[in-house]
Length: 132
Image (cartoon, rainbow, N blue to C red):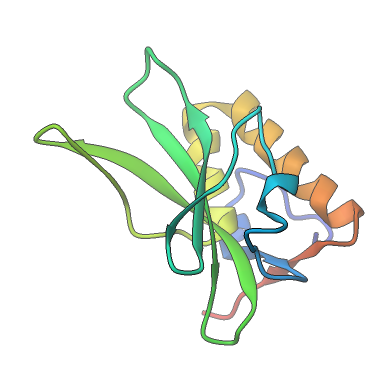
């Protein structure tokens, strides 16, 4: 991750986590978080809970997908309930999603950040600053 950029800071909103390889049927099980497993929710779009608690209406999901450049990124979406139907919000840049989660639950956001940093340490992805 870029030096001197921390979770919760506005500049962290512009950080994107990019995987070195796409998510597939063969490798998606390697990216478990808190015993949750990714599910393919659309072609080349994978989702997995990052924060979901029974007694809390707030939820956040990892969204792994390819972007226009062909790279696979980890973004985040909030879970939303409307008229009894569950849906996901428009995806947020990795850092922005983590900052939203951090505002709701700092400990959980730190745990998700640690998970992403472990992927980076395994040389399977990197943090990048995105352009405005």
